[in-house]
Length: 372
Image (cartoon, rainbow, N blue to C red; front, side, top):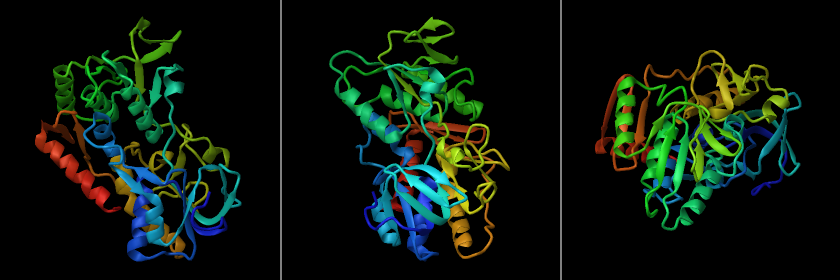
């Protein structure tokens, strides 16, 4: 329910407190509201910065690290905060339906709710399966499981060979307070380990996995008759299967009539506008650019934020949006090894050391301090 104002019509409605949407709030705090009435809708009072998740799982940081207080940001920006979830949209009527049945109207909307978990669709169902999405539920469940470990090593399979899967495998292997240490296997799938990064970085990650005793399996896994299998061979015994297989698209944007790509993500142009309804913008994991391929990754969501803020201000003031996010030829990735080091990746270059971990901490802190 709305914690600060009655549910009415808004000139500008932010749906979801994703990384890009936080930059919009900061713009409004720094430069003033471009409209008379605006609101943010999100089911949580705090947003989680995804870059801090491996450190929380390993025990390097407490669970509160990396949280951004959405209600406080909204208060500072002078807008309403509606703590609820969008479940339907009518883009022609310019209305959103919330989980409790309330309907909110808008003139302009921006959607950054993130994607949804798709582990069961990709791997099949099992009581052992834990999807990393939604992140808040994943962190809560992990801590419940970790607290129950008593003298027997937890056998964990991490599914997903991207940066998120690799970092989680390292984090779980080094989880503080779990005695004995968890036994972890990383199942990267047929795409292999870190397929979007360079061979130098892949080599560093492979050697680090070997040093930490984390087997790497570069084949696709699935549940068959309740057992985790690869190429028809069981990997049991496995106590927990953590899926870092990327985000899926929520159904409600496409069901409401917004144009989507083949996977169901909101189709947007170079200005983050819906290709079917230009009074609606979208960014982050819920959206997909149609003019060029931009992977769903936190680094791109963060850099899209200021662009989104400028284009929303332009629309609110009756101007055409003119800014577009163009990724650099190479992006910086810093992958924590869970042991006080990180692996740095930039283009074809790769390096590893404690200095990279300190660099990652400094970058994360600088980003979070914007919203403190």
